[in-house]
Amino acid sequence: MLKKERQAYILHQVNLHNKVLSSLLCSEINVSEDTIRRDLQELADEGKVIKVHGGALSHSFNQVYFPTNGVYSQNHKKTIAEKAVGLISNGMFVLTSGGTTIIEMARSLPPQLKATFISGSIPAILEYMYHPNIEVILIGDKISKNSKITVGSKAIAKIKQLKADICFLGTNAIDVEHGITDNDWEVVQLKRAMIESSKMVVCLSIAEKINSAQPIRVCGLDEIDMLITELPANDPLLKPYINAGVRVA
Amino acid sequence: MLKKERQAYILHQVNLHNKVLSSLLCSEINVSEDTIRRDLQELADEGKVIKVHGGALSHSFNQVYFPTNGVYSQNHKKTIAEKAVGLISNGMFVLTSGGTTIIEMARSLPPQLKATFISGSIPAILEYMYHPNIEVILIGDKISKNSKITVGSKAIAKIKQLKADICFLGTNAIDVEHGITDNDWEVVQLKRAMIESSKMVVCLSIAEKINSAQPIRVCGLDEIDMLITELPANDPLLKPYINAGVRVA
DNA sequence: CTGCTTTTTGCGTTTTTGTGCGGGAATTTC
DNA sequence: GAAATTCCCGCACAAAAACGCAAAAAGCAG
Image 1 (spheres, rainbow over the protein chains, first blue to last red):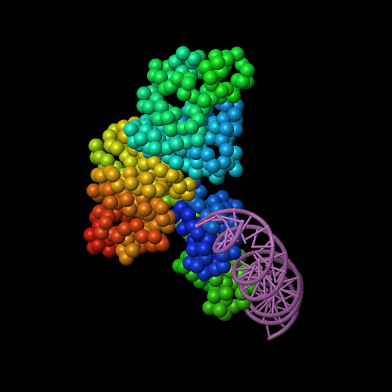
Image 2 (tube, helix red, strand yellow):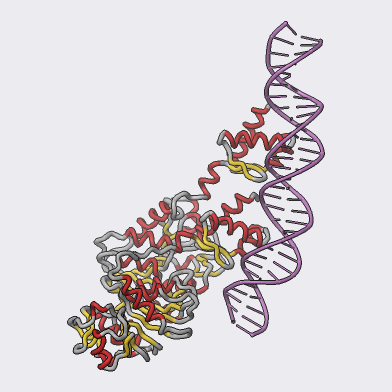
């Protein structure tokens, strides 16, 4: 069998089944594993397949596009994300809501971190999925199309069964009087459940949202442990929250 | 034997078998390998064949096995998607697996369709989510990073609670003897559960996968109701499946 | 037929290419 | 952590290609 022929066969198999194992291929075509590996390497160099340990993956299947551009005040969110990531250590169970700040945090996770992330937010899950070492648990239920998050009683029930080490909430509005507030009833139910199921609750919020309110109440300041913003901890804007017993970073 | 004559013979052989070996040719025509090599070189220079180490390939060979566009046999998958979409009517509960064919189907859903789609496949969910009128239910559990689908006992349990009107399975391999087979144990468990929980089971498969097998068995032909390929229903390749009691489209 | 050029072919020799093998490093997996 | 795969690297070896050269064949004019 000619080399080109063999490579064509391999590529064909990859495209058909989205993945191939070198061990299987070498017994099918009756050549050494080295040869298969070299073929896969060449195909990978040409961009035809993605080589992985033990075989190869089809290229088309693996690239899921996500609309990453045009995030509002992304730099601030990056700052927040950096601070938030510092709270996560190996082996933790981490519960997260949705929202662009959470996504930014997902992107900032150090590659060597080994932890379990639980969420019902599709965009967040997409980010977690491409992380090499974290386990991803998806909360299932009906999907709310505008918030791109799973909502409903099943999702809430599933969250209540958990006990996470830490919970990160993307915040829509926070003020001293009303605590955390939001504008989507179903999302609020979710967040309430997440708060209940976590040992520690951390709110991520850009400074702009501080001292603003939304119609529906999520929880009071007494229920959150920490507030992370892009501001330095001694910023006067944060003073009232510190006084209310919230840690600030 | 004249040179022109010989080259014509070689070209004929190439077009007939899609490949020739120089070693074989030289013993057939009784000339030295150098002569064959020079002939192949000339034919290659004229663009008649593609010269490779050890022989030559026909040009059609390359067209067949190295698709120029991104997604493999996308046209076929579109055809299949069109047929599959015809089976869905308003108000239905539709259970789907993952795979590129399923995604193509998701993209082909008519905008005015109102139905409920249930899946654990992240890429599929992403497509459903952008549809204006369908409800999307996400099966939650641990995410398998390879297959981008939720897997595990919770997911299976959740599926078993359902009773869907119709179930679409992206197929990895199907043949008359082994039925539907696949190469990922966890995905197979999912598919089995989906089959059990659906009134009607439809397999989507490009013709190339027909009469091929993979290591792990999903189900026998008796458990599926319909097989959709890009072929016309009277194609001889489908005959054995019709005989086995499977409807074909 | 003869002498000449041009084309084609075959034959060593040298290079290049393709493949398998062994051992040690890296990785996955339990 | 330890065991089992898988990967990577260098090497050996065989098959094929490239190259130069010379012999054979073919074409051609006188």
